[in-house]
Image 1: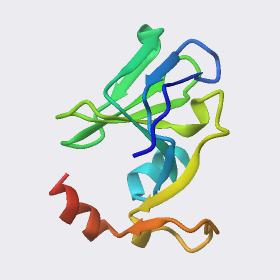
Image 2: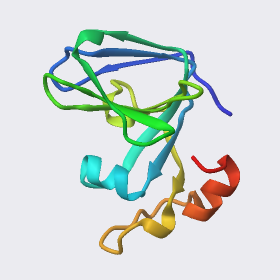
Image 3: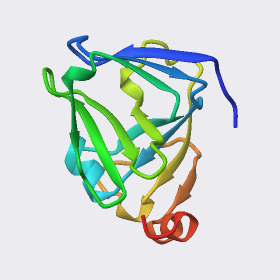
Image 4: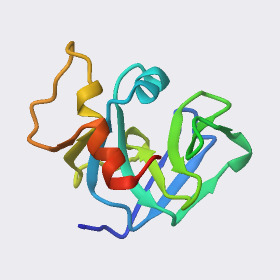
Length: 140
């Protein structure tokens, strides 16, 4: 996996600042129903692992979105911050939070069979269906 040293960013109001150490440069899109309800479209994210520094943690609200994951958002401005796996604390951060996006590459899409027909990306990406995701990672 291609890595960079550090990426920083913030929510809309700046109350929550984020520094990700060695995040992926690969952007993914999730088309599951929960992600689409959360943001009105696919969740565009970067896998940032577990080495994340948050400033303004008192402004982060956590929503328990499933038995395996939770979502964080800024309680001041409502910005979506992350999708986090409970067991491993692996963070998928919203790509739009980051100040520098020049090195990023749109690489993969998951729950592609759940994507509604009214939008489509032209990028060539690795695409996984809901069944393939569950086969890879088990019953999330």
